Image 1 (cartoon, rainbow, N blue to C red):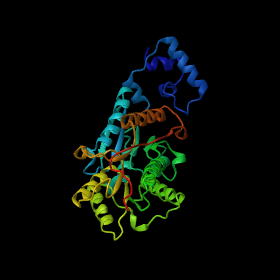
Image 2 (image 1 turned 90 degrees about the vertical axis):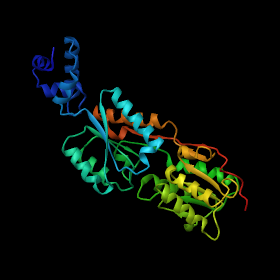
Image 3 (image 1 turned 180 degrees about the vertical axis):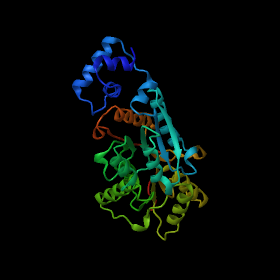
Image 4 (image 1 turned 45 degrees about the vertical axis):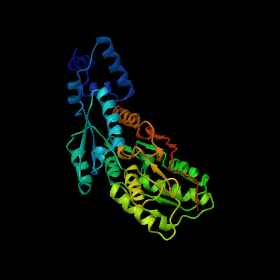
Length: 336
């Protein structure tokens, strides 16, 4: 039996039957149960191609990504994308990555949604105030945010606990006698950067210390800016004895700046980096705030997006995973 025959038997339209079988929320529970019972009794099995045509789906999910030069060589990025792709492929869906320029990001979202080119999206590098999120919520378009926003209570998201990760790093440094600690951070328009900076200041305050504004860098998002930010810290008349870097890409640049300046990492200056760094520095035992199971995290985001397509409420799809601190030789006792 095909979809038309099942619909004729029930006296319903093909669209209603298809939406009932796929769990659309606008179909009543009574209708869904009636359709499912009739389908089971007749031995009906959906034709995937016909199903997607009937409900107006493209069978494609995607991510619009303002790629930085280092992203395609970033193991963490590739692990997350690999996990998303594997989860969606297992469900018979296709997954695409569409690189966009930062200035054209929102128009690209609008074109993708209006043109019905994809059924759902993963939104990355979330902002505190994020126009992409605002647009997708207003359009009622399925999406999962990789990271929280200022309105995260209203949409589906997956994130690691940024406050907890910074707290782990500071606890380790404070336990080793460090009191003059710097934060080399990403731009504060990014939500993760804001949360990590807020946690840094809060934890220092709780420890009875004041954050020195000269030791709060807010512009390091890649290797070059990480290198320059560390040079800025080294030029201070009173250098910090320890530095936390809030992302692994700028962490590579920060380490290189310390090596070029002849600063002993772990002896002259302690260092903790958020995220595992590139293989080029694999010989260095750097203490790391790690986001475990990046591939599993990607798979979970893919599963959450599929759940949205099946009608799950966005507010029920919000997950916060915990980072861990991987100790390293880059953290030592404060010498000063």
